[in-house]
Image (tube, rainbow, N blue to C red; front, side):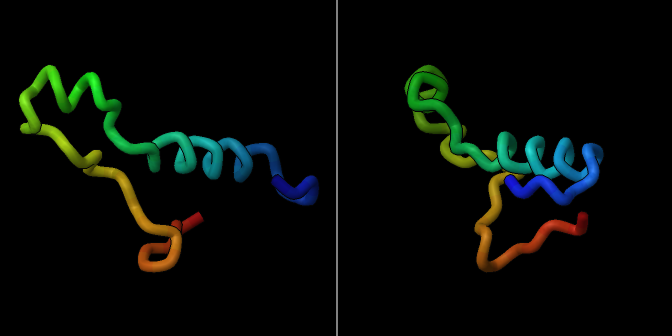
Length: 51
C-alpha cells in the first residue's frame, strides 16, 4: 500500500481487503454447502469502494 495515504484511509482499505476474502472451506463443509459466498465479497472491477 502506498505511503501517501492518511492512516484512517489505510485502515478502511485494510478492512475492506480482509472482508473481501471467501468463506473458509471448513465452514462450507460444516454447513453442508448452505453458506458458499460471503455477503460482503466484491470484485475489484465491478464494484468500487466509496472511500
